[in-house]
Image 1 (cartoon, protein in one colour):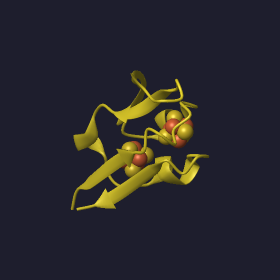
Image 2 (cartoon, helix red, strand yellow):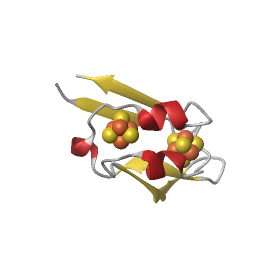
Image 3 (cartoon, protein in one colour):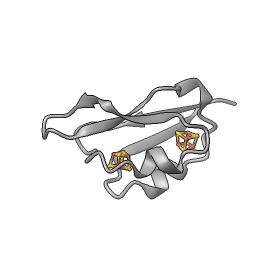
Image 4 (spheres, rainbow, N blue to C red):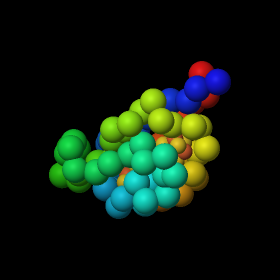
Length: 69
Ligand code: SF4
Ligand code: SF4
């Protein structure tokens, strides 16, 4: 089984919590700026996602969806 993480850039405030809690270093900040001017989190190593959902649980803005495929 593999997993796919998706960030809703319009909801993301760029707080970085998801980046710091991901044990697989899938996420990073600073490459995409959303319509509100926040540098949003993006999956930079999407293939490394294990589907643990730590990021989705910790995101204060409910901007992350993790799908098991
Ligand atoms: S589901 Fe787990 S491994 Fe995947 S991006 Fe989120 S914290 Fe990282
Ligand atoms: S925790 Fe949520 S709001 Fe914060 S950077 Fe990650 S996706 Fe964006």
